[in-house]
Amino acid sequence: MPVNLVNRFIPFFYRLDEDTRFNMKIDMGASVCFGFFAGAVYPFFAVTAVRLGVTGTLLAMITAAPFMGQLFAVYWGHRSDQGQKLPFVVISGILSRLMVILLAFVSKAEFFALFVILHFLLASIGGPAFTSLVRKIYPLQFRGQIMGRIQFIIGMVRVVVTYLAGLWLDAHGFTSLFIIAGSFGILASLIFTRIREPQEKLPPRSRFSLRNTFQLLKADRLLRLAITGFFIFDLGNLILAPVYPLVQVNELGLTNLQIGQLAIFWIAGWFTTVPLWGWIIDHFQPLHSIVISIIIFLGSPLIYFFQSPYYLLMLASFLGGAAGSSLELGWLNLMMKLGGARSSQYSGLYLTMLGVRGLIGPLIGNSLLKVMVIYHVFMVTVGLLILGSIPFIIMYFVQKGAGTGQRKSK
Image (cartoon, rainbow, N blue to C red; front, side, top):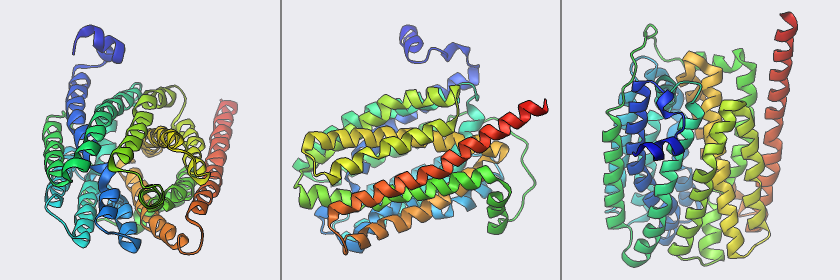
């Protein structure tokens, strides 16, 4: 990357040590390949399932699939704390993306759902280890900004690829697209093997205990508040997982290209705002980024509730992407801040609870569709988003009070 471009995009690059700069370069290369993979498949899993005839509970399971594997994240967080983190990230990446290649040869709805679920089950294995790995390889002073720029690269690639993938799907179907995308995903994991993970003094090996892990909630009041807030407001978002594709395909009659364009605006919202969230986290604290995400998340369900025209659906997607990136950086950095050396366990607990709400959210959404007008479900989400902000407001004042107490004690 030319020096002038580096200085513009990463003004602090030459203030980093050699290993951090090397890891950033490897991370960026892997991110380009991952962006190709994610842009080609993730926006189209649910709509492809709908076009294959998937409805009802099976559709809810597909939309819940990204969260099913997270149910076991608390276990993988414990396991990854027993050794180096990189193997968990790489192996889970390779195996999960191999499932997408196999998915390309499926034509029956039931098998399509099975391989989607297997993909996310395998991908979730590396989640807690990735959080701890990022904490190890990137310095605290610049961590949020580095993560923001990595997400920016992924987003730029995803915008282009998602647009082309929408055209390709309308013309040729999903078989060849998923084969190529899965190959790029595996390549991303292979590039990531070159990351230089610092050696660390490992804790004594111990048996996994779910009870001991959940003792973290009992011992850490701030963690309890955070997990409660995440559960309530994100459950509101996940209720809409099976609703969005049904509205887009059955109510609005959108084409794959139009759905791809909405995905592009979602990605654009993600990658154009993520550097800002990284700056906010580095200069303030992760809690600010999380609260901002809740406020922005309100935009999308309100726009759909009022049955707005297509150009406003683009705005809804943009807002959803911006909120998603703010939440992603927010929760990762909050778990690192609260957990310290136990970041893997803290993030594992977060991801396990994400799995719980991710599993029940789409099922609740599917049940609500049977008892109310489809557009009214969006207002249920609005209510849960507002309710979910309360624990974070309490958390803010608890932290502020603790800080004041420390200053007075000095």
